[in-house]
Image (cartoon, rainbow, N blue to C red; front, side, top):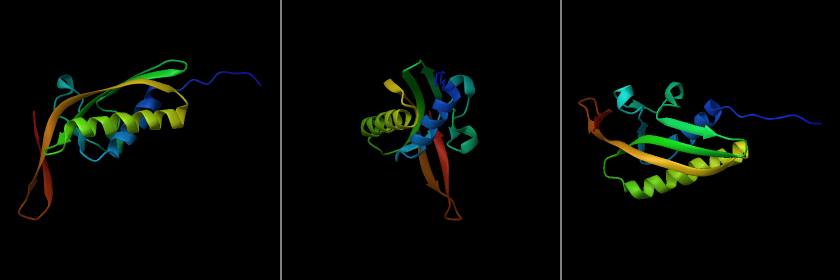
Length: 123
């Protein structure tokens, strides 16, 4: 049976966002300067800070992320690149030619009076 399968950029971006959310050290995704304040990773914001270019057999991915203060940023970036490429390949069959990561900020956790954490983002 013939036919064609096309995977939308938004589908790949969602896969990227979900994979990024699993990487320890990534605090949030950033929409960049034009989007203003960085937004925390939530299901409704999962595609923020992610740009994908999907071809018929390959994909290129750009990620703008905010990292927790104190993490080894180069190591977290490598893990992020690896997990994203693997997730996209497994779920779509696309070969990921590159995953570019832009470190857009650092997030600091501060204790509140109620012993709950809140994020303070530094740019």
